[in-house]
Length: 359
Image (cartoon, rainbow, N blue to C red):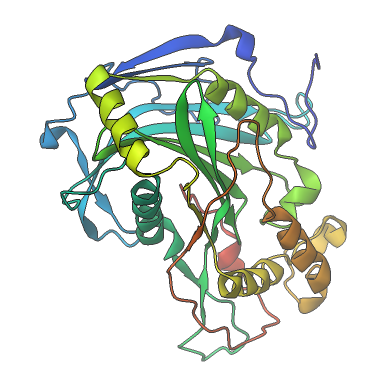
């Protein structure tokens, strides 16, 4: 066991001190273990109630798009939240990043009478629709070298879903998806499982890493590995026990008899979205460790080699099956339109270097 962390492999909380978290969802019960909060910036955590009334719409928040427009037919309620700081070497690197965990229950209203979230295809499509509206449609203003350019390109902020697959945890099937930030250092992972015909539970983990020499999605990989953050996530998910009531178990089994278990569709980005993502990631790789005192300069010479950035992203998005992963079924592609990239620019406004928080 390591006594201290490093910038490359920071040290988080010990799972040996994890406590049991129990949630009563009425139609099901949810249990998992998690360490006590060790927040990076304070805040209020683990204050959610121990029970949820799924039949009370007033308890749910209306889902919103990334630009704050209400999404009809989608609601959500937070079940649990936590945040853990990860440290490097004491005093020198007191904070290298953090892992946030958000557990939500989502309600999907207005499903056709013959559709249920226990159907793998229905769940995958509903999850993709939610992510398209809330995450994948988000755009950022592209960098421009033309001082009077009032119509810059709009760049996608996230590539996803990545590494989509179905896994079994303690008798329940979970849809697993990752999301790759293109300009920021955040790294999000979602685990989704249905609990009724119109409700599903989602564990969302957000990894954010820090380094003075790696403030973007490509360079941070050279400085801070995600391994120790992922270790804690998997320890939490390995402890999850989701127990459906007898009625919902019977309904799940009935529907999955009609829809064979081998039909587990996965959700994924398109080749066109990957092509645009490579350009955005490349244009965001402007800072490197050897920049010295002039590290905020933004000339094209400070970008990483394009072929290295593209190779990194090609490797990053490869399918990597996790323990308990089922064979992949058909692919349902992200339907967010690809916006054209018309400029290759050689300047980066300093305002774009300000840290964003994208959960």
